[in-house]
Length: 368
Image 1 (cartoon, rainbow, N blue to C red):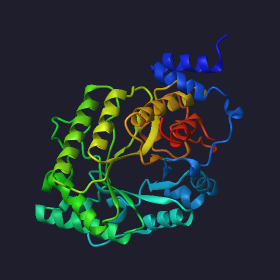
Image 2: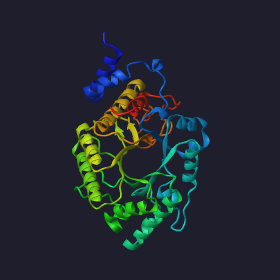
Image 3: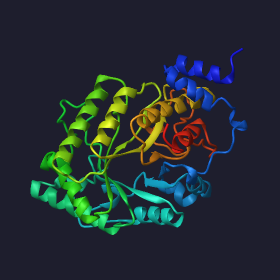
Image 4: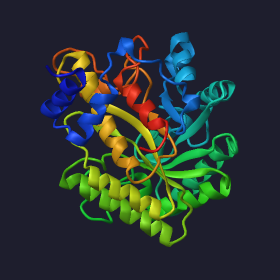
């Protein structure tokens, strides 16, 4: 008769194509039923800081939500609050209320707040469409960075300065995603922003954040290649850059390119850059319905991803894009066709830890 570990390993390989090198250790990690497993270690004991994205509504209104963040996290990042759309209702006006509340919550509970994000093609206020020249674009971009980073100088120590610069399917290794900044300034806007950020807060860690570079397939390989070209070019020109954020919005039905991801992380480390996991979750719309099996498959995808990163370098932080299934972006874009709720995050809707949290604990305790 198969043991629970062997049964789990077999299911992981058969249902979702999880490799034996992942299925076996993961089966061992999760072989004990949840009710019989030892309590999770406090994140304060983890050697790699864990964190999650904050959502302002429940942060203000739900004690259980706040308690879960404080219990499980050492770092936090706002889902919103520091994006242009939130900060800049008009060209002349900055509104910092959301970000200030997030920072006050973080510092009041001994947590670090990451800054997300200074340059992005998305969540831009309509008035930015009227930026008409390169000189105007440079003035607005640099002024925004100086004002926002200046306000939080020394209090927000890590910033996603550039978010998602590479198109979903780059036409070439030099392809950059369209935006008002790319339209008016070309690729030079990336170096311009990083240099402005470094001048404004010389002690801050400056990060480029990107998604969809971890999967098997030509499109994802091209995205890795384009990202590597961009980063190498910045480093060759001595543009200030301290790290790369791997978002990690994983797909339950897409395999991790373990060799490709590990090689990419090795290249980043060879360039002297930190590697962070910044927005981890697992899109589960195409996974089987039974919650126990689905939770295992979600954990397995995250295990594959984190194992491939750890094979090349120890990440300096791991953050999930939310802490509880109750509040996640996933149902907005990847709602399940069977009516079952999505389960992409480490805690369920009742704030109970799931297998994904056990995987995060496993990797958070040190090199693997």
